[in-house]
Image 1 (cartoon, one colour):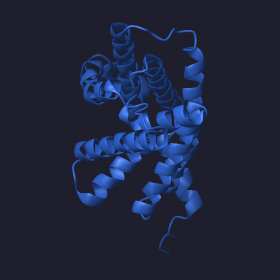
Image 2 (image 1 turned 135 degrees about the vertical axis):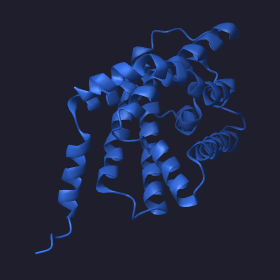
Image 3 (image 1 turned 180 degrees about the vertical axis):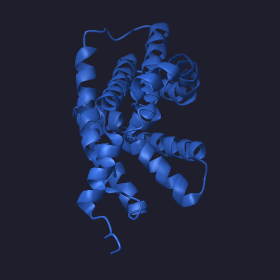
Length: 231
């Protein structure tokens, strides 16, 4: 007899078993937490945050809601956008992004608590130093979480869907997405406060330099990371 088509439950279990391992999950969560630390340090600089996080950060500043909660809400919206754009390609495993969104939001909250003791700089050179430090945390975190090959964050998920649906290269979709999010954050801020909040030179520096910083990190850690995940 021909084998029956795999059901939802079996499909979900197969994807979980294929992807999930303790070491992979450890690297994934470590990467997410380092990104959260970088976001928190960037926020304390008062020079803006990375493009992807500019909308939840701006909403947090305007509404007074906790930044981690705003981040989770924004990511869940991105998950539904993925589903609307490409429901047939949206596997059950992709719904785990919802859980990851809550985890990352909690990491942002935890990171804000961990960095609360760090004074907010009053001088511009020190603010830039904060941004530089935050870029290294974000770059290392992105490198680890991406190379864990577990599950993309909803922001990267949207970029991947856009790339598949439009046949536009992923890096071009990332530029389009980042610019759209930053523009959205600027519009929200200007419409509600009349001023520009959450989007400053730190946002631009993150957009330009995170990818550049990842390159030397990759050269130093790729061999070790592959060996760690293979064991």
